[in-house]
Picture 1 (cartoon, rainbow, N blue to C red):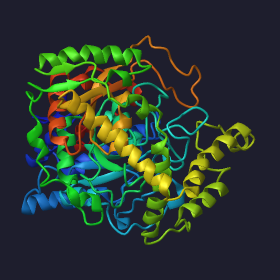
Picture 2: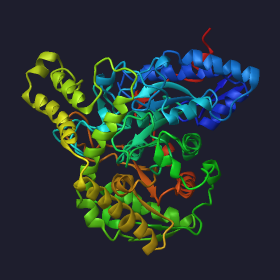
Picture 3: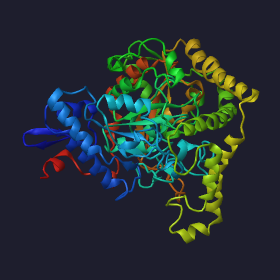
Picture 4: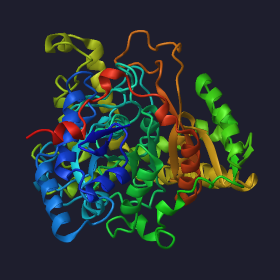
Length: 550
């Protein structure tokens, strides 16, 4: 869909691609100032008003002046490239210049007003390319480290932060947005920016991409620097793009990837980073062998049925499907406790390092121990709606107070952990299960080019291996699916029309191949276009509205 201004058809911001927007900017059909105004208005419509999706924690107070400067630069010197004047959102654990006026807090008041020393490396790369950061996306507070690992029952749900409130999916009222980069996923689903960045430790890019009908790339750990990103684990963390198309995600990855002296693991990349835009080939699946680790697919009836149907699409595109192609260590992967030990230790070590490098922290939180103390003092204050209707009801609820204290328990587990022999054994177990006897063994045993799975079943092996994963839209829950739970607590985890995705999994630094496979599938199916968000969750502002204003 497009909208006309005079004789020019303008892109519909619900679906507009970065390439499409850059083309309009180059041709002078609209300016970056107008584009930023339109996106800020769209955020205003649905973020705290109307459906109150809580996708964005804060917006950039100088975004319009930055856009004006980039418009002037385009007129005077020409454009910098495909991201010149393009508005993006960043997850609120990715540092941006303090003088810009936005915070970097991981959703917590503990870091409100803290002064970061510089842009995160990925942000700096994008800024140099001409991107405009119009806001910070909401997330699971501390990227999910403030609740029971991987569970919703009786704990703080994903997408909830003290500063940002509860993020909601735009595909069903009061629906769960899935995993910590939820704000980035929701924002992309309904066009609150041209592109976004999330971060992943265990599913936090691909899961909200899946649930919100967008594309997410979780790169190999070491392809994109983590410097300036509030951490969980140096062994598993990575920033990555979340966009409405494989093309846009590949474009952002082009600018994000590369070596950074502040993140040693990036200095061991194998050669030059390829141009991922050259991977965009509709015929990329011809002659490719794809494996299905069938034993990972559990408790997902509607998703499994759609996934099974998609195998015929792959065959029609020239791929050979090996089904089943089960991991030799499946049961060990599913039952191992090594990941939790590694994450507990890494969080303590890596967060203490990040906090120590901040220029200033007004709250005085400069260590994990100080964060625990800060959080316990706020235990009666820091849980936003919909958990309570007013403060008196909240204070009087022992259940809610118990839930709050449970959020802190994970911090205490991390603080009590040590870098010891058990930690190193757990780390070795992770690499053995995820890499040696996991993904790499399966690829070799079945002579596979890549592995495919429903996104919901895929995050574990790549998380502990540090290997790449790309999620693209696959389908939607049927309209007659049971609404669960019957009374949301506080969100529906299953609902009619909620999207789900399919992932492409490979060995380290196989992003180029995986992007090609994902693009070929996306172009053959166009699943994202098959269903839009529910009507009240779709912002109405378009470029024509902004351009018609005097």
